[in-house]
Length: 119
Image (cartoon, rainbow, N blue to C red; front, side, top):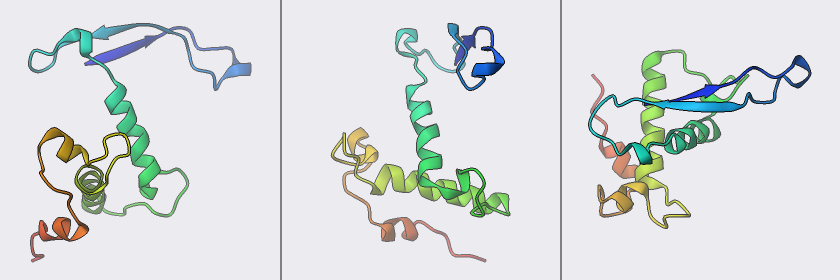
């Protein structure tokens, strides 16, 4: 876990300016990670990608989920599309193909085939 430590908040005239980063605490939670390689870059990228690709995460929208289950399903579909269906420009394949989890490009029909019948 990487916890970033920030200094004093800027004066009120510059309230949207970020505070200065003064340090970071790294703590092992699970496993034995190489602490020199611990970074928040991947999580921060995902935190930006979700609101950009899913309307329900943008502010002041009517595309919200009224039920938690619907919200969970929408997130699961977005993650599956992002990792198995969408070819990423920098990788030239999907992340699942790059990591060896999948050996082919999935179609939307493949995702639908994973669904269990409704009761």
